[in-house]
Image 1 (cartoon, rainbow, N blue to C red):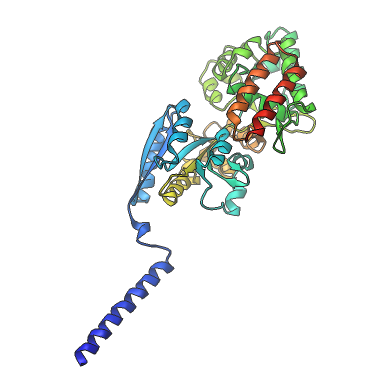
Image 2: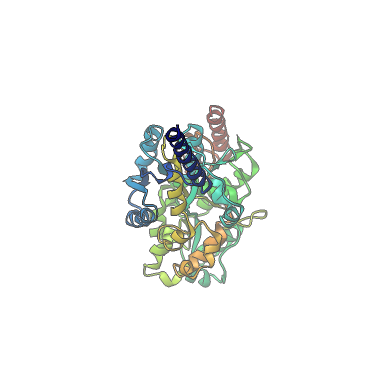
Length: 422
């Protein structure tokens, strides 16, 4: 009888110790599952000069998180979207690069999960507002801002000085006046160059100009292409071509041709992304390069287009916690501060860091201003279709095949048809 009691007491003691240890484990927030080794798959666009850097950053992440292994895959940007659409729900990928115009479509189609935790107030206040807005759809964040870009106004300092101007234009009207003076003085025949070919580049410039004239292509969820502000912006584009202030080849140019035109001093002004800064700095006109925020108008200090990318978690991911941990590492202050060559930081406070400023200090200072004044391309699930219609109709207006009001009216009708099906 005594032996039987001892056995019972021993069993009870073991059970109580197990419960106690289990309770201690829960109280520290750790569990066996958190210590299991997992593998996550991440997909990024190739060819942007970030592959080696990402491999190095990922190795550091794995060293700090030995229970998480990351498989990296790089594909051509033009193939990335389709690959995500066909593979995300099946769980082939956990983390994906997401271009801003895809956010609404991916969220609406259930391709992405909303991010698993809200940003703290401290984080939210330190990230440029347009970055957060760009990855938000229906009041939920579907990605963490990561690679960030916008368009800037580049100008030739010597040309402006010869024409009698000490400072670059602050408004679109000032740009017109300065370009007119430069043309009339014979400094350069077509002072402004744009990327207005029938492509996404044209849509980006159209966003810049409509925003600069206080217009919205989509207002309160509805197409707004026939509004006075959009008409004013489109008319500005047309008039700049008709007056010869803008290079007539702009309607055939992409961003690379804009850069080359500027480097060969066939333009005094150019609207382009941040990549152009380094290219011009490495050219024979580096000492003539100026960069400033995009002009505004009477009610708009400045307005440019958000050209950023985010990092999202696919709906098919079996390891969203590990995926989020990897995303937070890639977008952390320490990583971004030490990898300015990949992207300008999302964090406002880093723009006071000497390590960030030493990388192209002039551009960094301008970016810290421009990043506060950006707008996203229309965030609708059928953005791809709308973009095509904008390209076609605005191109026909710019080349004189349609009148401005006629072309915008047709674009409005097409946009209404597209948005009604979303």
